[in-house]
Length: 353
Image 1 (cartoon, helix red, strand yellow):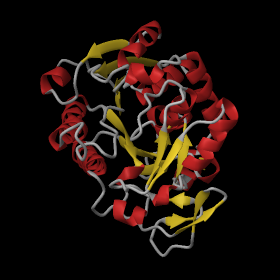
Image 2 (cartoon, helix red, strand yellow; image 1 turned 30 degrees about the vertical axis):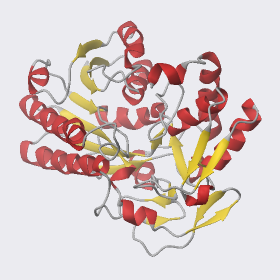
Image 3 (cartoon, rainbow, N blue to C red; image 1 turned 90 degrees about the vertical axis):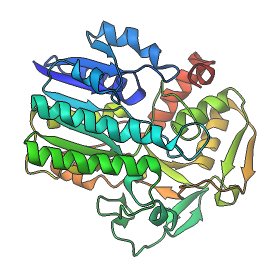
């Protein structure tokens, strides 16, 4: 048996990864760590227990909680404050962001050093320069922004690659994840344990805790279904900003190979996202929702929001070529899955906000 610790096990990514890995193989034994502080996270506990997961209530920021963990072979780190606005609004402090996303990584790395356990980090597209992303040349077309030819390194019609600049400013969230990546590479090299860093695009699917600054697809669809007023922020209130969507279960074939049959010559850092074919603008998402649920109020606002970008689509060519990885769940499937969940759970937004 391969013993795997998944941090943030009751969150959207952690829960789906455990569930999908359990369904595809019986070679894994799971321990799940979660502090259960996020509203709605307790919903996942009973399902994980039925899968045989050893759930431990603990916090990656607290060294004594990490010291109490049993030895495992691998850590999949899904624990984070994933909001791009974290520490920049009135909801969380900048210190909390760093403690969640960076101090937690340090504690886990000391744990991996102790047991020679490998680590896989679910990182983010937000390690790429916010100023460079904001400056990408785009043009409106069919209710969305399309990328024009750019001289910036690491961007093409296929999306943003691993060569895109990671220079500041990023956001406090992005900076904490980029620092975590660097520390993981240093610890892995100096203390000789394996490490993989998967930079994910926007994760989306049924059961995600929807908020405007994280879980945007879930937030938008549930809000549309519940007839809650929505707002296009920035970009002249057009709603043309584009993101790609990736279901976390699509990560499982990649994670399985990284855990069981690692290619040690592969790059340590790769992009994994939905790509151009799985991308959509907010305006296009509203049009989709209107066909499904009927009309809803969407306000156009010219106000701007820090760290926003007109177009973020991940280029996963390296993952495809090196790991034979492909997106399996198409954008319409993801949207249908969320919409079905919204119809079955009309109070979802209230439960997780």
